[in-house]
Length: 335
Image (cartoon, rainbow, N blue to C red; front, top):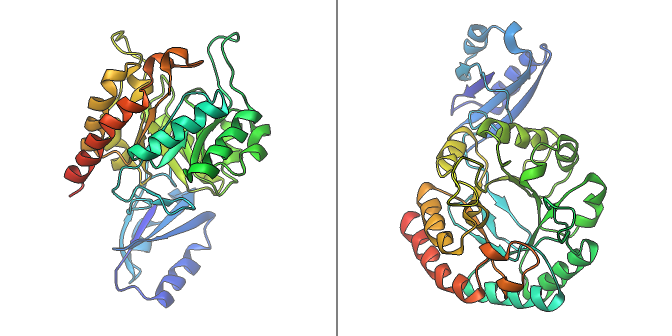
């Protein structure tokens, strides 16, 4: 149940209403936005008389919520969530920060070369896989702990915040100095992992599963937020369809749908969606036009020799060329 309060509601009157609600077996969450204050009741609200609540002098409207996700729901949180990293970079404020880097961290030379190149081109965060979930058990699985150390070295030398994927609960302590923890598509419904990440106060980049519906993605985010972590970022990275012309199918419609249903930021991964370097720029431009809050793009200093996903990676020179267009597009669409 959602209770929207009148704009002139005093603290005293709001406290009286909250005291009244305390008699019911529900949890009351309060969101104070720039335009209005909203109370969200979570629990068995069917025993509560909506008309009786609406009669309180500070109540503007009362609405029952049918969706199973509450904390993620924009009805409970009308204003967009803006996530601010330690260095001041914001996600969800109307800007379109670009995260870039290789699929896998392969060596110190490789990650430093890529980090310095993408920073010079305009990227504001460095991505790179230390732990790699691969379809084949014989494929490169990442440098793991060493890979994390190399990412931190690149962060120290360039100042770029780092984004990298976690695969299991027991690794959480290793990610203490990671700026954004990524949950990959294969782990979107690893509910035990999501619950543990909910206990952190660190941004989580939640990728949509290959065959997951938007509601399933919303519910996965709810797992994290239910644990107390409200720093969740959606990532649309393409879904599996019958189409074979691209690696996956980028669901551009997911951007406005997610932003309509939720207050959380949405980032797009055109590299995994298409699997084709030449499609990264047009898909990125389309994503910006549709309202995306950021992009995550694969860049490798020598794609032909990459140990993972080289075929879809841009070279630093290619990335530099499209970055200027993406920045101009952001300025045009965010006027």
